[in-house]
Length: 342
Image (cartoon, rainbow, N blue to C red; front, side, top):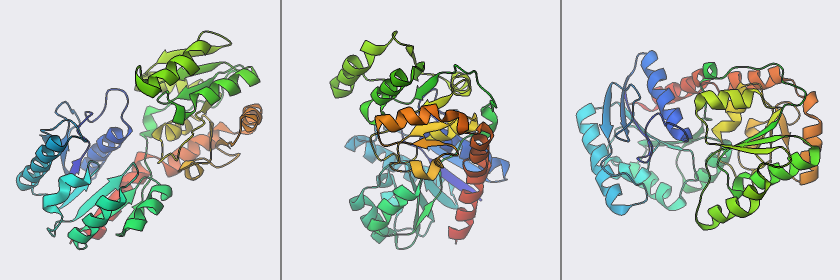
C-alpha cells in the first residue's frame, strides 16, 4: 500500500527536542515501511525521517492564511506525484480541501481539539471518503458532535528507547517533565514537593514573554535552587530516558483537558509512576493506584507521593508495552487503512 503522511509545518520529523506529534509520524514512517508499505511524507524541510519520498511544505506557519494556501498547493502536488492509495493527515484539515471530494481515502488524525466548524464541513464535502481518528476517547467524543466516523487510536512510544528501571533510590526525586506553563501545573508540583520534603527536578521549555513568561518569572523562578527544587531546561531523548528512569514519580498536575500527553506514556515505559489529574485523557492512560495516582487537590497530591511505594514499577512498564507501544498502535492504524481503502 502507498501511504502519504503529513505533519504540521513548524517542526521537522522527527523533532530535535519538543514535538510529540512529529515523533508519532516518524514512528509511523519507519513502522509502516517495516511492514512492507511504501510511505511518502509531507513535512518541514529539515525532516530526516526515512520516507520513500519526501515533500517539503512551502509555508512554515499553520496559522498563517498565505502559508495555508501554499501548503494546500504543496499537498495537492505531492498527491499528484506520489499517487498514494491513502492520505493520512496529522496536519491541518484545510490542506485537504482540494482533495476532499475525491474518492481517494483520507484519514484525519487529531492530537488536539477538533474544530466543530471545520470538521463538519469536511464531513459534508468528503461524502464518505474521510475518516477521523482521535488520540483519546476524550478527543473522539468531542469530534463526534461534528459528524463523521471516529476511531480512538492512542499515541505511542518507541518502547525500546526507554530503559525500564525496576527500582529507584529511597530518596529518588520527583520529576516534572513538560512545558513549564500554568495548565501543566508546575506550581502545584512545586507545592507538593515542598509539603512532602521531596526533591523536584523540573524539565521542559518555558516562555519568556506574555502571561506565560510572567508565570515563569513570578511562580517558578523564585523557588529554583531552594528546598530541592531544580530546573534543568529542555531535554533530549537520552536525557529524558535517564531523568524519568531515576524518578520516584513523574508529577504533572494538569489544569486543562489534556488530549493525551505522550510524556505520560514515556514515564510508564521507564517504569515510573505518574501523578496527574483526572482531566481529559488521563483516566484513559493512568489506572488509579496501579500506574500512579490522579489527584484533585494539593492534599491528595501529598497523599499520592506518600503512597508511591504501593505502585509496582513492573506494572507501569507493562501498561506502556500493552497499550502504548509503537507496535500496538501501528497495528491499529494499518487495520484502519485496510478498512477504508476502496
